[in-house]
Amino acid sequence: MPVRFPTIRPSEITPESVYLSRRALLAGVLAGAASTALPALEAPSPLPKLPYQPNAQLSVSEAPNKYDEITQYNNFYEFGVDKADPAANAHTLRPRPWSVAVQGEADVTGTFNLEDLLKGQALEERIYRFRCVETWAMVIPWIGLPLAQLLARFKPNSRAKYVEFTTLQDPQQMPGQRSRVLEWPYVEGLRIDEAMHPLALMVVGLYGHVLPNQNGAPLRLIVPWKYGFKSVKSIVKIRFTATQPRTAWNVAAPNEYGFYANVNPAVDHPRWSQATERRIGAPFLAARRPTLPFNGYATQVAGLYAGMDLRRNF
Ligand code: MTE
Image 1 (cartoon, rainbow, N blue to C red):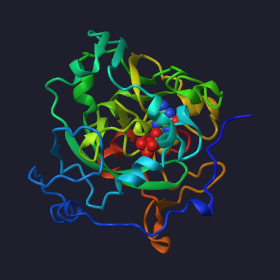
Image 2 (cartoon, rainbow, N blue to C red):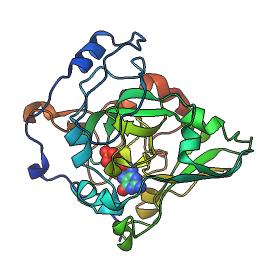
Image 3 (cartoon, rainbow, N blue to C red):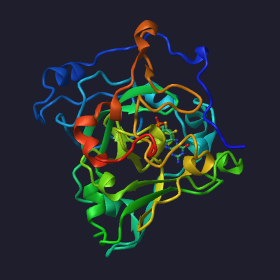
């Protein structure tokens, strides 16, 4: 029996709590113009602050969700299958010190301390739309570095057609791994050209601060034009491969979750429609809106899939 994302109950719909930060208003005014002089988004986070430059050009002008919405309503099955479980349980994860193994079709491989990997890398803030396959959506101010910039350091060779990312496996730190709800460790993958696309972001922070455990500390992927399950958390291994990696949700339910997982209103999930989405935190009547092809990033990414049948390659 394949594992399934639960359907959304009416009781889960968040009450009216949308807000516009000064920063988001400014970002709206400046949308399209490259500016690095925006004031920082404030967050009530107890975690250390990060140095970063806002990237207005690659940010949407919509108001971000509240910090609490982003950090209290999560999918991270290593800490339980309910939306409140990761925030309640992820304190057992020890995100520091952290190392990442780099393997496969690349000239530079080995095990790297996370601090060494990030040394000298300029961090950016990007306000991205985020769309879960379960049809909820948020707008999130991530802090990270372009994935392409990180991967280039390892000098992938010409046989590297895909990149595989693997989450930590340690049931002591991740008690949800004691239940067989998914095949552990959680694995995701991208085609190499998708990974090298400027929108793909390796994330280390949120709202100006270090990433909270429940959001995938200390290192997680964000691929904003794909359903959220591609955005693998707490990464300990990056492997360049010649063949398409097996991925956690595709292994669990291949007819429901494809390798590509591009946000696509025209291709429904077998058990629900993808035509609309529910913005977390929006007033009830305004909450459901049409899903955008590639989650609103079609202009930038549709070319990656030219000539492909996106119904077959869902
Ligand atoms: N990564 C791991 N390791 N385990 C998970 O269960 N859930 C995925 C993705 N990455 C998941 C994961 C899903 S289904 C979604 S929607 C996003 O993380 C949620 O990210 P967020 O909690 O930061 O919003």
